[in-house]
Amino acid sequence: MMYRFLFFSFMLILAACGSNEQSDMVNTDIKLRDSVFTSIQSQEANIKKIISSPNPSFDLSTATAIYNSYTFYASKFPADTLTPNFLFKASDIASSALNRNDDAIALLDKVVEKYPNFRRLPECYFLRGFFCQKNIADSAIARKYFDAMIEKFPNHSLTEQANQMKLLLGKTDEQIIKEFEGKNK
Image 1 (cartoon, rainbow, N blue to C red):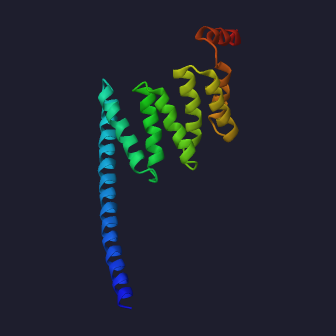
Image 2 (spheres, rainbow, N blue to C red; image 1 turned 90 degrees about the vertical axis):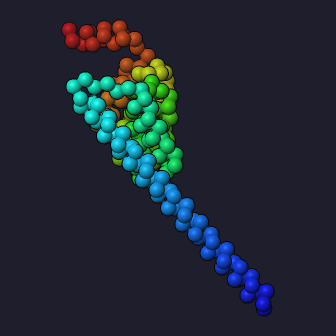
Image 3 (cartoon, one colour; image 1 turned 180 degrees about the vertical axis):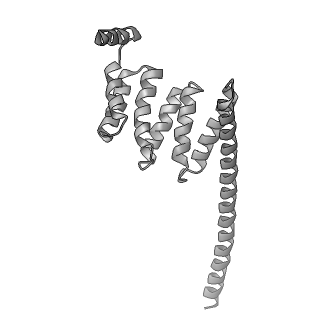
């Protein structure tokens, strides 16, 4: 009987110690999340100033810093509601400013796979095809992405653009210009 009492007392002490450690970990995560979020807000404000200035110049270090902040946040807080939007924004930075198109597509793939209720999911589907066609020049994969977008979101405003983009796949700029000139005659 005494052993049971000691055993249960010991278990209660262990449980109490464990809950303090968990509480400390939760507080640390909250502080880290808030710190990274504040940094992202500051970086976004800086970018808005740069873009709205008379001579905007978006340098590589600024783009890399915010890309790293977005992806760090997403890796540390995958269940957070801000994460899919940060991944979406990181994909735009990766493609447009850093010329890292494979990374841009991989980030969009992650959004499509892990965040099926994200409000900008149709755009993710479309942009995968667009980035693949524009920057990687892989018509087969771009077609696959556009087809997936069209099938999943047949009534979305980007669906017609996806159909148009599919018609241009595999064509050179000269071929596209000739087609447009032929239609305008």
